[in-house]
Image 1 (cartoon, rainbow, N blue to C red):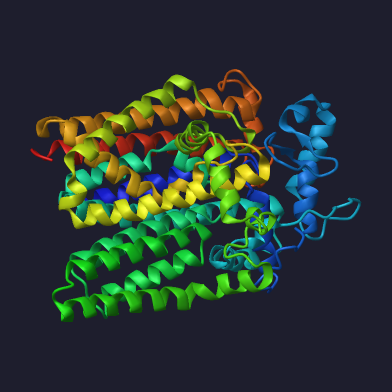
Image 2 (cartoon, helix red, strand yellow):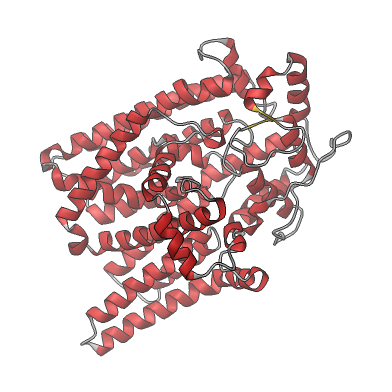
Length: 525
């Protein structure tokens, strides 16, 4: 079978697996999901820009009173109960809540005191919410749980674009289709990534845009073309700026790359001017598309990002931030970021066994040593671009750690799910480092091992950690497993859940099979 068909198969499996996660994950279990949804829902009424102090709709506020909310939520509405408290309620009360939640829509809000809960994610750039608002407007007569489910599925669909973009990126870096496909299969099986994407949030779009930006920059640096590749770089960055504030880190990263090229060709004035023109065009397009949002933030809040931490710390000077950076427990901070990046089961805040994370850390350490020792980033322009963009992204994460430390007085307030937008950069750099210490003839077998291990981690984390907790049962074979559909649309009953479960196992097995089948046909990686 041609490789493109295998690639389409892995993309389809990725989407089906995401569909299962969208279905079994409880309502509002995803980090800040209700606030993200609240912004998109408000925009669906015809408002292009939502004020940062706008309140979530009555239906969202009522749902927070009816559903079991995760224990990690920083603020819980009056009348809300955590998941542990929910299962302590009488059966009749749980049935009442579930029945009311299933039929909740904009017309069934009488008899409740909705409250005023701010949809604080309105401080985020608007592109994702615009895209989600369109189908939500078409679904405005549907129930809340149906709207949330469809919004989750659309988010996974956006993220799935990265499967194709990431394959092209990997193929460009390694110049090997089999290796690129193996990495695609590996990423398609990552359970931590699936958890992050199976919620209403702009991270799904961030993954697609981030992967596209990496590919655009790598293609440009290989062969600069002013009226094609340079424009694509600018558009990709502009889309990023309209998706998440963390794409601001790409501005200094690209500036470093452009300045480096200009300096490299400083003796050839014509070539240097050409690169300067490329830089000006790319930045002009990017800032023309997304700069208005940040100018608006500065005008309204006096801060560039407009995020809550920036607002709280507007009076903090550079010296105070530098002092805080020295006092941060960086070991604990980075450990928390990596742990929650590898796998973290949403807002209920529980993780895997520590030994599993130590295994990941071991491979990270080996890959880092191999990467530094190989110095391939000095020989490959694509690897250098990825390294610079990823490095500045981490600098942005470090800055946010400092800001959270000042505002919350803790070093471990930063989560690692933001790193998923750079997951292709991570895996490519990881493989460069690992392959530097592994003999060529063993590389495809090592990648096969990683694929099987990731599939095993997915099955284990789902069926022995996450789902038993959400279903309030010790054994998934019991009838209690159907507790997983208590806050889902009525068309997703127990039979629908079983059907999706079968598809999950089929998709996981097919992804592993596809990865093995393509990798075994190559003699050398």
